[in-house]
Image 1 (cartoon, one colour):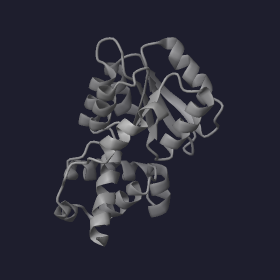
Image 2 (tube, one colour):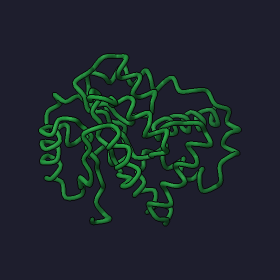
Image 3 (cartoon, one colour):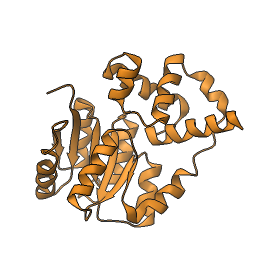
Length: 218
């Protein structure tokens, strides 16, 4: 595997959907599908083993659904960016996914070219939203949990540096280059700082840090 490529895992119980996505992503030289899972349980095992940069996760699967899988992935300390890909634009599904640590929410009927662009943005550290759910998600992001700024004191200097990079939307690979450390070291620091702050995803961490910076200026 080329270390310069961003790694992706596809999780969907429909083989045809996974095949179509894989073919779509094959057009991008800097993206590589390194794992596929047809169930939530399989996804968790593979995520722990491969630690992909991005997990594209179906919402409605037989057995363990996407939301349950998302929760278990975050509970296992998986810091990969996780984007839901689904046919559902129901408010409850959207808000629950974000609350459980999703980094994006895309609809399966998205134009393929647009979908590919959004996946590339997700790998690059941006939160990606289908237009139909943008308002719902934006409202959810604007209501982060209130946490005392003193929690920053619990972080090491390096963890604060990485948190500031996350707040700027940087991916692990970009942070590693910026701080001249390895991708693996960044992943370890991200796990630690999320645990210390009691947060479930990079999105929550970014929003929290931006809010802290805003209060400091105020």
